[in-house]
Length: 435
Image 1: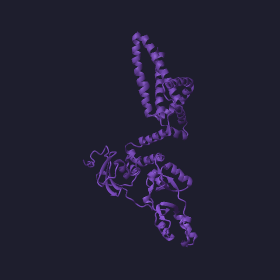
Image 2: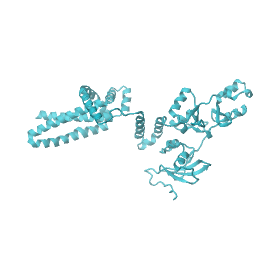
Image 3: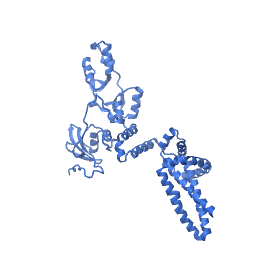
Image 4: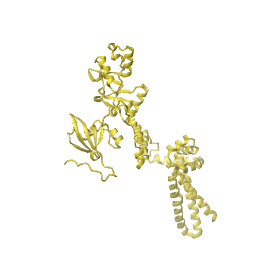
């Protein structure tokens, strides 16, 4: 009897081991384990090998867990029948249910959840041996299970995809960086990580400088006047046009112009601006930022002209524009300060219509959709389905938009009032829409 009792306790301990191991190995961070393996942690390497063959691991754990649970229950039932007769079945069922539930399930799994990294590295060597020993049995059981799944019409192939991996990474970034004070401390880092993941989804049209804001020079002007305009410009690369500003015929670099002047010994009258201009590089507006970043690197260029499907100039995009999508605004001594977003009373903001939705989301942590429009003015036009008049207000995506200034059909200034946050119950509420 004592031997049977000791065997039952050992089996309950074994059940606790399998239950805790399952929770620890499945709850541990694979990314952290990978990093530990790169740092030379042998046990982390074993954990990664086990997780790489998850079906074998889970099969081994279930086989071992069921063996010890059923064995312990059978021995306990036999022991209770011997002591109490037929009523021993009910007694054994109650006792074993309580023991297994507390000591073989809840307790080890709770511990494993709170110490998943430590426990996973501790049990990994033992589980590796058990997986090797029980592989034949696990293999047969997996084949039987797959047969029944196929008969039920269940797809047993891995459904993972690159899109799912990116979605998981975005979720991990928001989950790990979105709690309390941590959110405030790593807000910029989170925006950078999300921007890197979005490079393949954002097109150059969304970040390009519109053609109306592009500084360009008429190639037919006298060379002295061209030199003066290039010197006065804060930029080193200037598009050259003829007949109309949208007809770009070349790109002049300030350094190339200086070298030409030096070679001519200052005799600029004989210089031909087109002879020192580079060929313009046109790219479609549907090009993603990731593709364009790679193109910039391969061509070793920093400047491209964006055109739409009809060949019409949309604007220009530079390497700095793409980098700013990742790290935020990069200011330098040549930047022209433009007040695009200004705080206003009542928690609202005065926003220029040309400000991009991505910049607002980055700077103010807003969640305005940018799949249908790239600027604030574009979003209002898209949602309103018309060109609003000055003073009109709209409520879209829980944000309030009021048109303050309009130049012909272009919305140039908009007051944007975000929804109050959960912890701002006493914050002033925006005025109600007119009936």
